[in-house]
Amino acid sequence: MKQSKLFTKTKKEAPKDEVSVNAQLLIRAGFVDKLMAGVYTFLPLGLRVMKKIENIIREEMNAIGGQELNMPSLHPKENWEITGRWKSMDDDVYKTKDGENREYILAPTHEEVIVPLAKKFINSYKDLPLAVYQFQNKFRKEKRAKSGLLRGREFLMKDLYSFHLDEKDLDNYYEKAEKAYENIWKRTEIADRTYETFASGGSFSKYSHEYQTVTSAGEDIIYICEKCHLAVNKEIVTDVENKCPKCGAILDKTEKSVEVGNIFKNKDKYTKPFNLAVKNEKGEDKILLTGCYGIGLQRLLGTIVEIYNDEKGMIWPEAVAPFKVHLISLGKDEEAEKIYQELLANNIEVLFDDRDLRAGEKFADSDLIGIPYRIVVSEKSLQAGGVEVKKRSEEKSEIIEVEKLISYLG
Ligand SMILES: [Zn+2]
Image (cartoon, rainbow, N blue to C red; front, side, top):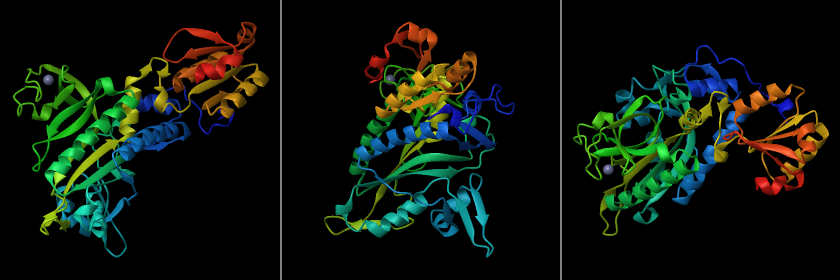
């Protein structure tokens, strides 16, 4: 991608109405645009990051047998009346009406669609276990939408739903999902500060699990056991008498955190109202059990920015960076163009700053955008024998011969 053709431009000043670091940097660098509080457009650079995150999650969900589908966001009232949530979630959801007074909900979650859908296709215990997932925009009324991407009114989520004949099978799948989630945090480079966190589980299982990432931008408080790398949400810490649920140590260390994902055993909470049942091996009718597994992608992206930044801008981990290389020409456009073509031919994702600007402006933009490798082609670098390569995460730079650049980046 040539930067002279890029749809967006960087801004020098952060927008005055944004207080969060993630939204300030993402807006200044042209990754997102704010339509209104809690509602953002993903611009080309931001969408590239979102797609990287989405693909990591997709690979991990496919690896645990998830099948991807896509459900609508506009749901009929009737389905939500069956589960009782038309009334019970009234404060949290957007509702709308058509000209004939039919009522709808803009979905905050999809149990009310996936369970009756599964009923059309699960006919036998032999069809189980089954897991389906989607990436879909959710809607939630949010009174304090001031944390940038960490708290949205409309936001992209991955939600996976699993169906089981008995608790043993649900427990077994839940463990697999926990491992898949750990892989996702590792691959997005937030694992060392992301804790599986015991939280209240509602009426159907004692606890649910949240995945909480420690950052000063967080609005949740968790109690951490470093030894077990797990945590307890402040909401339930009195329930567990301030003790680590695994090793029993007293929990006295608290941190602010952001919930990037959660997993629940809903059991028969949604299958019962829709009477989703099959006959087991003995010919008895069994109501199916479900688990629900969510990740907020927009929130995860915002959290990565909160963790990986400095006074100059963002510092993207390579796996989710919009491009691997930021190629900058300082008056050496012909030489830089050749390198650009070679990088493209080798499938290396590159943003090529071919604009007619001063070096200082180009470097400031490069630091703000935060692409992992900055490669400068200049009179000085060519005289020194090649191009100047600098990692965004490091201060030092080095000269690499043009012929060796591809293998260096490989
Ligand atoms: Zn412990």
